[in-house]
Structure formats: C-alpha cells, structure tokens
Length: 367
Image (cartoon, rainbow, N blue to C red; front, top):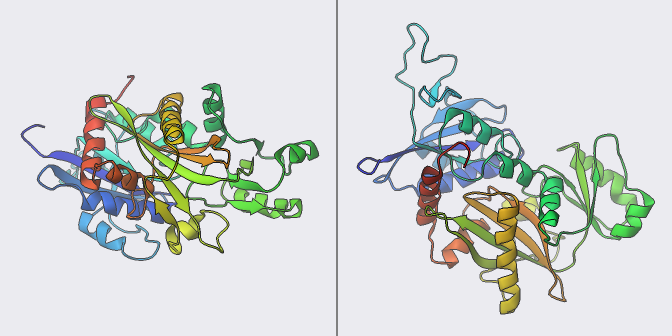
C-alpha cells in the first residue's frame, strides 16, 4: 500500500436514533480524507437497515440538511467471507453463476462512523472481524461494554475508578425501591442503558416524575439506568492510540450550558447548538492531570483500541467522577473529540489519517 492509495470505506447512518448524527460525522470524515492518499468509498446504512453504496460527494452535501438521513443508493452487502471482495452487490455472491461483479468493492480498511446500537455496540465490529477487514476504532468487547452504561460502570469500578451511584431497571422492573431512592437522592437522571447523544435522557427533580422518565427511556431501550446526579462541571477528555501503539490523552474540555437548558441533551447538542466550550478547561493542573490519567485507565479497563472520549464530572471540591465512556465519539463540526485533539495540534485531517493507519497497523483477529 506504500505506493498506492489506501482503499477506505466510510460506513455511516445506521438503525439507531443517532442516524442523523452519524451522517453529519461521516460527512466530516469524508471531506477530510486526502484524495492523494485515500481511495474513498461511502457505504450508508438506512434507518431500516439496508446497506447502500453512495457517492461520497452526495453524502457530504446531504449533511448540510437538518437531521439528514441516508435512504437511497446502490444496494450492497458486506460479506463475512474473508476470501471474497469485501462489499458485493446485494443478493449476489462471488461464486454465483453469471454474476456481474463490476460493482464489487475491495477495501483495505473500513472507517465505521456509526453511533448507537447496531453499529457502535460491537455488532458491525464482529462482522468486520469475520470478514478479516481492518477497521477504525474499538473491537467487539470494548464496543459492546462501552455501549452498555451498566457494564461500563462495572468495568471502571473494578479498575478502582470513581463512578456515580446508580440503579439498573431491567425488563420487568418498573420503578426504584424506596431504599434506593433514599440512597440516590434527588435529582436523578434517567437514561437508556444503551443509547448515546443523550437520547431518552430525563432529569427527575421529584419522584412523581419518575414513571414518565422511565417510559421515555424505555421507548429506546428496555434496560434503563437511574443515576444519582453529580452537581459539578462537565469535563471531557479524548484518548487516542497511535500507529506505533502509544496511547495519549488530549487536553480537557468543559461544556457550558445557557439558562433554559437543564443539561447537555440532544436538542442542545445538535438542534439548538447553544452549548459553549472551553479547551483546555480551566482547572488546577493537578485536576487536569488526574482527569487525563483516569481517561487512560478507563481506556485500558475497557480494553479499548483506537480512540475514546471519556466524560467526567468535577464537583466543587474537585472530586473527579467518570460519567460515561464513548467508544466512537462524534466527528461532527461541533464534536468535542476532534476539537480537543485540534487543541493538541492534531488537526482533523491528520486525526482521521492517524486513526486509519492505526487500524491498518493493528489488523484483525486476536491481538
């Protein structure tokens, strides 16, 4: 590949409620891949789950519309057969008689820009492992554990990292017991266990509001978390793996919300675009170092690879608690992960190239 362009397929869209965010993230990645270095293809997954090959330029243009969707394209299949072309026409196969394989596509690496279930949760990563195709980002285990907030917390706690108090409501458990209510206190945040972009998240200031909040979260995921609120500053830190195996933490970033927005929800993130950001966050050096160290330890605790964004709360007493770990953070123009690395001197185009080269260096299989 040293004398030829790297063949990369950007995979985006998907069946989750974060489909529009994925489309916007993918447009950012597609528009920053140097055509002198990369031979780029774009593979979209519709909200119904159909895989389609689209013109990269059209995917970039579509992201200019509010809450974009991918709905049309040439139907394709990603084959789990490592001896075949990676992407083949839908309904056709390499061994079929009389099959026109002119639309078959072989690639060196896949860049999955997928957010939420059926993409960020280890499902697509498992398919790519079967196909023997290197891919950007985390493997099956870290993707699955990072998507499920319950197991993220359990793995972090096992590593000795501070996480907030919480209760899990599995299918069939519809409320929080009185003893747990006393322990959690108010307010609490109710959220789907396996969703991102703050979809289905509610702040509950009165236990009378709990049932409605649980119902809203359950519309997205039957498993729900009820978390004790951590009143403090919202701080984020990126983690990046380099092709030589080094893993580094980015400068920190602080999210600020104007009056009228209770927390950094989907509306504030992607519709109103009202949040403010400080990079680096104005923190004592010792707290910044603690956050960066905890981000690296969280990355290791999940057996992560490639990249992650670790979200923290910092209380008035400078107590640092991990809120969540995002194993495939957003790459939209306002997303924190590329902005934090830009503050470290790693621009967007360099960042996506580093991620691709790290994926190629890592390969697939047990490692």
